[in-house]
Image (cartoon, rainbow, N blue to C red):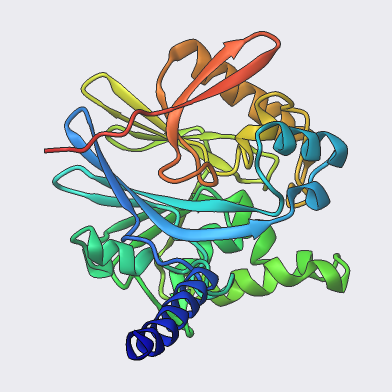
Length: 313
C-alpha cells in the first residue's frame, strides 16, 4: 500500500500541476473560417483573430458602456473579433478587408493561416475591397514589408488614401496621432507603388452584384459593400458597429478612432434603419465571429440577431 501511495501521490500532483499550467496558457482554437451560401455565391468569413480593448476607456459615455457590459454579464476588456469576408463567385474571389497583419500582436494576424485552412492561398485572391484604411482592416496587406496578395487590385474610397497617405495631412496632426499615417504608408503604400491601388467614389457599382455606398464618419471614406446574388443580399458594413452590446441600444455612442464622430453616428443610424427595414443579412467586422446576423428595430432600440449556425453538408 505504501508503495502504491508513494507512486500515486506524486503522479496525481504532477497531473494537477499540468492541468493548472494548461489552463493558464492561451487557449488554442480551431481554424477560424465559416461558410454560407448567398444566392449563387459562397461567402467565407475569415477570422484574423481578436483585438482586446477596454471599450469604456475609448468610447464616449464610459459609464453607459460599463453598465451595458455588466448587464450582458461580460467583462471588460473585451476581445473584439476581426472578421474579413471572402466572396467567391466562381469567376472572382473578392476579399473584403485583410485584418491587422503584424500590427496588433499575437492575438491577430491570422487571416493567411485561415485562408489556407479554408482551401485558398493569397495568390487565389484577385480583388480586395477595403471598408477603410485602418490597421485592423488594411494592415494585413503587407507583412515584413512584402505584399501578401501579389495579384490583387485593391479598391478603397478615394477619401481615405487622400487622408492617410498624405504627408501634408500628416504634418497637421500632433505626434501622438501619426500612427495611422505611418501604418498606412507601411501596409497600403507598397500597393500604390506597384500600381495595384484603385480608388472610387461611393456610391457606385464596382462589379456585377457588388456595390459600394458611403458610411462616412469613422473615416472620411468608410464604405459599406452590398453583395447581391439571386435576390439575396449581404451588407458588409465595416466599423459601423464596434459593440452590439452598446451601440444598438445607444447608436449615439462613438469610439475614439472615429475621425468625424457626428458623421459616424449619422451613418450608423442610417445603416441600422435600412438593415432593419429591408431585413437583409449583415456582416460586421468586429461583431463576435463570424459576425453575421440581422437587425431588428424595436423602438427606441435596435436588436442584433446572430445568424443561426449551420453545420453545412
